[in-house]
Length: 111
Image 1 (cartoon, helix red, strand yellow):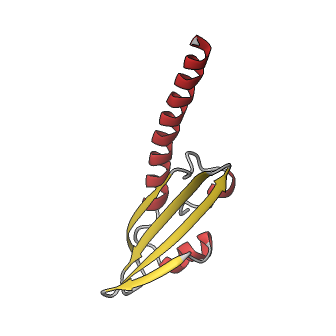
Image 2 (cartoon, one colour):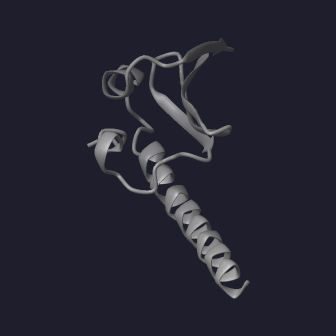
């Protein structure tokens, strides 16, 4: 039983540390785009999954979802642009956002 408890504790600590790392990484990625033209983001990230217009502002949503063995994984990035297409604010959520900027995530941050 002690081995199972140690494994469970190790997995829990790893999950917590990964989540903290993911938060810092995503905050850096998302905030790097504030002040940019939304078309620069689209050039880098590809077309958004969804786009909405509200009171002269535009909301762009990129949703990356997958399901493995009945477990759902997702990372949603949301950018708000003004009437001049300049990114003004951001939000992100999910349980599968990157904790490091490597592989496919290297291009998420503005250079």
